[in-house]
Length: 194
Image 1 (spheres, rainbow, N blue to C red):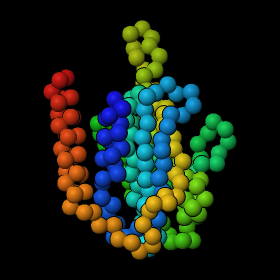
Image 2 (image 1 turned 45 degrees about the vertical axis):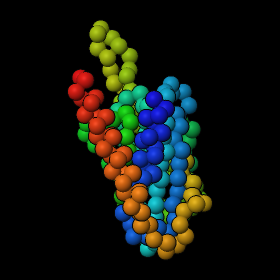
Image 3 (image 1 turned 120 degrees about the vertical axis):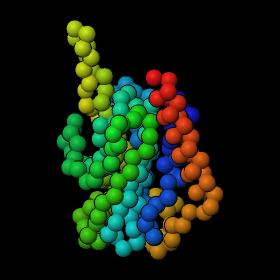
């Protein structure tokens, strides 16, 4: 289980960023929301382009209680027990998964954008909501859509400086291809066993 989670997190780090250059990056470690019994975890990253107009986000999760229902970026400060306003959303495939990688892209309006300040101030969080098993009554098992993982996005001190190009090396491409091949094989094998 832990190997699968580490593999999925490693795969997320190998996904090449589609922007030509990165101005800054943020990263997050996702952990269970207090009170949620889960072995799930994950990691995420957000990269802002050098023209401050495009943002690419990726998050890898594993060991979740149920399949991902939604993945979002939220504004952190909010009353206790509530989540702040939505900042961005990840694309969730259908059918969903309990171990995998989510990606998303959105736009900024330059350095004057309010979202830019939210990122720099460390007020953005990644929230993963899953379809969790609920109470059983008369042979019917309900699914409860509930938050499971949350992680604060911090500025990444190891990110390339302004204008530094993000060009994957050949070894990165081969590792990505190998990783995607293993993930595809795993899903095929899981389907065959059902």
